[in-house]
Image 1: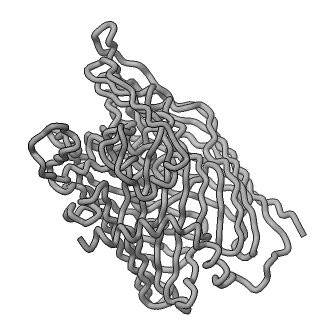
Image 2: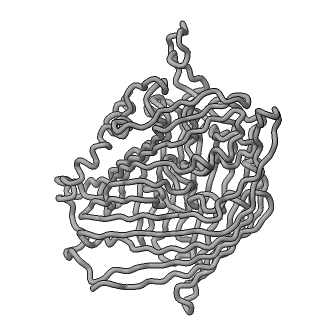
Image 3: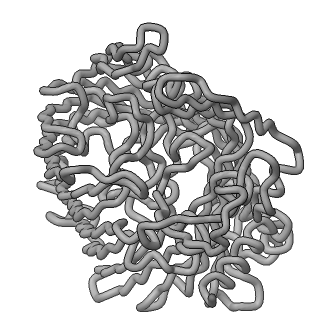
Length: 526
């Protein structure tokens, strides 16, 4: 009950972030005394990447948490990027990014059912040969930032590149076009003298991947949502960051809402639910009321996580951290009735810029409780005499009315939960979200020019909230890579990586990745 009340308070507070921004920003401490710096910098980057290997899909760690850039086993593509970063030291600043990707990849066979012929057949799907990866503009005034467009965003709590991924919004899928507003960074809350800081964001966007779902679905037991809207909100609090122990805590929440959904059962079209979108829905989704004619309960598909991180600073700038993210899909999870379900991690950073081992992350993911195996709600069964209610089978990242919580097939939450993209039978949902897994990530330097990285994991999936995997599927995954940035050739870097999967999530794979990158800068302004 206490957790449920805390959640209700937090969620009702998040929508007012934009309302209190003006008040808080006036009291925030500026980064430097000067409001203006003498010039700005335009950065540009060109990258060529090639991957080769066995199987149809790239190994897990060549795909995971790379914003959906690589999914197929064999790829060759070129990426170009122009960026002007916001200058956080200025009272007013602006930034923008344009990043394009073009290339070719191998196709993957997916199964589909033909109602006309009453038989199954296969069809091959390919990743797009050209796409806009990022395209956005943003402005900053004091401590407030507003962004419009497609922007890659990682976790605000976890270490990007080493963690297995955020439970609510990770770096595993492509960015969604959206409008967001929030704080530039953690900001001192007025009258706390820096002992408590706040960081938060509120955004609205729209999925553009309806065509992907239609191309990959089996049309036998499918539901296909289109025109779906997206919202994300986060509020974190942090204790004074220059003390020996710093605590960060808060809540995240995402939701899918609006649009329409087509349903198919045993190969036959059943119906279409047309929810549409009304202006009031953008406010209702923040604290959903009782549903209307289409959705049985609150509108939209809302999910999120309770998050906390503890950073202990040792001598020589070393930091030892512990953190957790507790996911929820409904009231039972909000009140932490889903047992030990969550992501738990520890991290060590040695504080050296060129340490032999600079960062180590170890994580454990458990999603096996899901508030119990039974979900029963009288609203699902009109006329039933069973008036009791059991809120189990949380079925993380899946929903009865919307596409699964993924963008272009790649899960938007923790990457260890196998994404719908890997379901070659065309069943476009998370089939293994009832699972456990261990993950380790480490990186460091071999001299001044070579940076290395290692990633490894074991995971085992037992099914999802309603359907068991018999037998359960497991997988071991490894990745080792290094990047070389020679001082003699400023701006140039080369990378080499090897990935290996053994198991059935989704299958055995071996892959090699090579890349060549050039980065440069152009100064302009006063």
